[in-house]
Every structure is written in structure tokens, then in C-alpha cells.
Picture 1 (cartoon, one colour):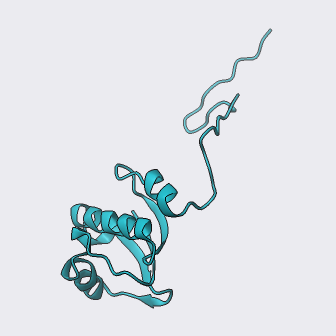
Picture 2: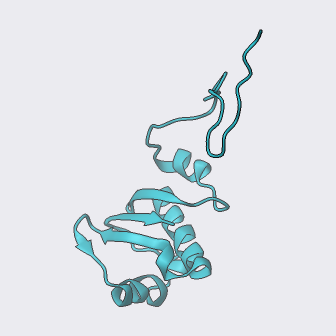
Length: 115
């Protein structure tokens, strides 16, 4: 008699196949990163070199998304590799500095987690 896998609440039968085609765990940079950026699903961790035009474009798009999703969507934000910004200082930098309009700083390393 053949055994039948029974699904209990919260358990699933083992995967028969996992397709990783077009999947990468490598960091992408520049135009490749901009092409891979998905505004419909922006969640994740970012390390953006604002001296790079493509990274600045991603930062501007993330700033615009922050306007839509609210300030809490940006977590653990640092600029230039060390300074962590308060909510008020970040608001001034991003909104007052017109980042959401594409006028992003042209130097520094921006790190953040978008949720």
C-alpha cells in the first residue's frame, strides 16, 4: 500500500523541486541594480552609494515610496556609514531636502531597511 502524505495544520509535504532560475544572492550595482529594483515590492536592505547615478535614482524612488508608506517604512537608516538619523532629522533630510522629488545628495553611503 502506498503511503499518503497527510497535511496537518502548519505542515506541508517536502518539496519535490525548487526552481532558482533567475534568482541571485549576489549584490548588484549600478544600472543592473536599478533594473532589478521593484517598486511594487521594495522591501529589503539597501546599501546605496550616492555618488553613483543609479544608486541615487533608487534612493529617490525609495524616498518617494517612503512618502506613500509613511516614515516607519524606513528602518535602521545611516548616511555616510555611521550617523543614525532620528525620525525628525530624517524627515528634514528626505522631505525638506527634496529627496522624494529626485534631488538626492550626491555623496555618501545610504543604508536602510525598507519595510
